[in-house]
Length: 183
Image 1 (spheres, rainbow, N blue to C red):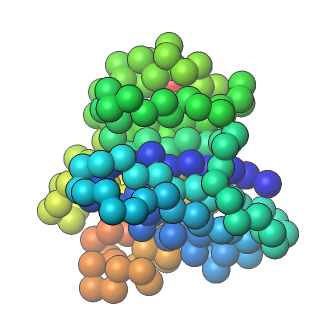
Image 2 (spheres, helix red, strand yellow; image 1 turned 90 degrees about the horizontal axis):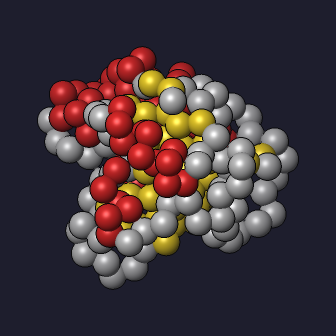
């Protein structure tokens, strides 16, 4: 069982990305997944969370993730908003970080001691490929670099989820996948 937690800011598409990740592994990788978003009446710009559980057998849980194996951060400044992205992490937790600054990965490692950190400029890739600063598809591409999900499964799920904009979003995922660094 793999437990993943997405941290984002309202308007970045973190909840949509979580749903697409569940589709990617469930439909295109023959695994099982459940997504539990955590949002309510928050406004654009407020913290948003999504919890995903993936397994090779049916997932009987329908709950939040309290001890994540993977943390995906859609906005590197979220920790300045008082959000502890290291909460519940263990010594093997992996971070996937949206940043254009390799120094940000080092800061996250120093503060939270993640085992491995993957980082990509998801926002920049989104601006280039889809014309708006919504990094959800790009961050799924960066997540694919960890090996949790194949980039092909991500592209197919994105394409099916976004209709006409699917091609641009799938291209953003592929580009982020290609530029993702590891610290």
